[in-house]
Image (cartoon, rainbow, N blue to C red):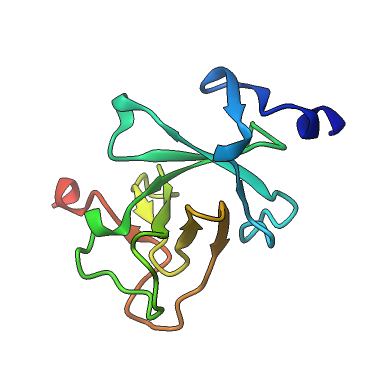
Length: 144
């Protein structure tokens, strides 16, 4: 841990992305972690051309844990979390499940991630409305 504080970057080894050198200025701190992963606090966003528009939220302290994420506006251009957010400062993402028990790709629209790109802080909230589901099916058209 001390080495992390002395340098401007850290190196991690991942199964999916190989060896990564990460600039500390791109690490988001999730003070409360994520639901089900409360002990993980530091994450980075990985962009890969092959998986666009999906991105990856990767845990720095356990690089074996990563989540595909997607902007909610790809799914619902009118997506609203009932909070005032500064579009210059805040970015929303949804955690994606690539295959649920039925083989569907789903998005958790009820518990979005809010990333503060200015302060490099992140949090996951639960929206208190029945409008959004935790398992919104993305590939519904393919099933019809």
